[in-house]
Image (cartoon, helix red, strand yellow):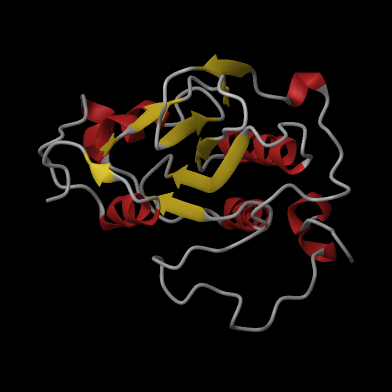
Length: 205
């Protein structure tokens, strides 16, 4: 189907991928999707859109948590030059500029569906040129393997955003403040490298 986003139509109507080439060979190789808004994607109802904030402060990357507790503040504390977007689209005040945004969500059902709504809003083009979407960061909501229904939903959503990165469960992040001197997961190091961000403090160990 021409100009169709697979995550809007669902897995059954998605274009047939090439058998193995379309699957990432390693966790480092993120799934790729459309890099710009897509024709034909309907604009979501106002109730399904995220708020917008006028931003005068620069950031190399804005982490946009699409729901409460997504982890945007944690990522901002770990990545130098990045900022949390306070759960809203950071709209630049300077004309002709854009904000580089990475959506952030947990991997439970509510987190994934919130990510899908935010991705739909971006894909509809309603944000114009004010937002450059880098991709979607999915942070594990619990230890262990993701259940199949959630993996299937994640796959559907991944087809509609430029990149997807997954960050595993980190027990220390639940128990206390982020320790910038502690080692960080290799998946998070890969995320920062892909976005050309430097770790804060000694978190690169």
